[in-house]
Image (cartoon, rainbow, N blue to C red; front, side, top):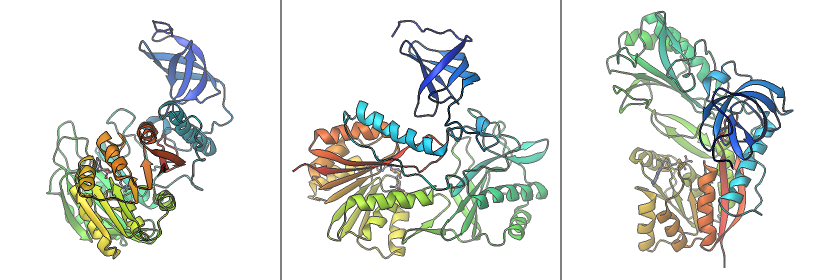
Length: 458
Ligand code: SAH
């Protein structure tokens, strides 16, 4: 690679794209020097304006496509290029699945040093649209009228005229517009983050796909809500079937959507949903997987890889509200779950009760601290499942797993790079990788979810 960048800012270049980043930009190379250009695909040739130059990479903006990939499709979303929530709508779905599989293959080669390992084809969705069961939409104002829509890429400006999000559940999408119109009619003002005034910050809608139960969460700056009664009455006359209307108060100047306090304005505090035979109570603040169809696919894979017969002891580390734990508890002797968020563990215990799965035990704490402690207490599980956040597992946790020495480890990952790093450790410490299965939890976006089975050697 040359020492100085081979391109200058504002220069126009014709480039040939050979690869794609994990964020969905096309990659072209000049003498090994990479140039990343959003909205380009491998195999394409394009005129590009260079907009950002560093010593070891540059970023360009597509000006004109000269050779078009046969895998390119017209993005069906009207605001695709403004929004940034999806990164792959311009690539046909079959190619998205191949791209995700290749990305996992790549890191297995480069990071895990497992060049010969097979990666199964990505399990995709039959209808990879309208899959999200939760929507959280910012509320703003334009010419005295309330508007709703996602923020424009890298900004806090609401995309005007955004009436739908085609990866969001249709019921939720429609309800956001209905609630906004009622708020407009009764005179509710939007929160203005510049001056920290006004009322309505976000409209959140969650639907239990299997139960059809709907929860609406109105996020406001203050507990006091002008025209509250008219607002709720208006919503109920439009949506009499809604199960729960909650108010969440967020008085902070923050990008975090939900605040600390939540009140019930109408109906129940919880809605329910099921994944397979397990029932879950979902509150306004509970974490719950956003793609219920693929969650079932992913957990079925976890169950298959865990190979339970009913006599096993299992640990589910990073268990959240116990979704995987409860799924496995149906076929194991005992399941231990550990999770850092106390409210999630409260939900996990409640969900265990609802499902009468008394063979579960949930603990609040850092998995990398609790696992070594369990080890010192003599806990020796047959199977360990881990589902860490993007940064992957701490080494102390990997070490504890190796000391516990389960027959099988099932690793669920939302970041192939840290998965590969952790597999390197485990394969250097008496485990071997038996199967790697990407599951497409987030179609149209560049997120890659992978589940992997390891077994102990000897
Ligand atoms: N398995 C769950 C949730 C996985 S998301 C499901 O499928 O629904 C990852 C979880 O790890 C989150 O709930 C997060 O709160 C938790 N977490 C993050 N860091 C942690 C740590 N150091 N120890 C334990 N849990 C942690």
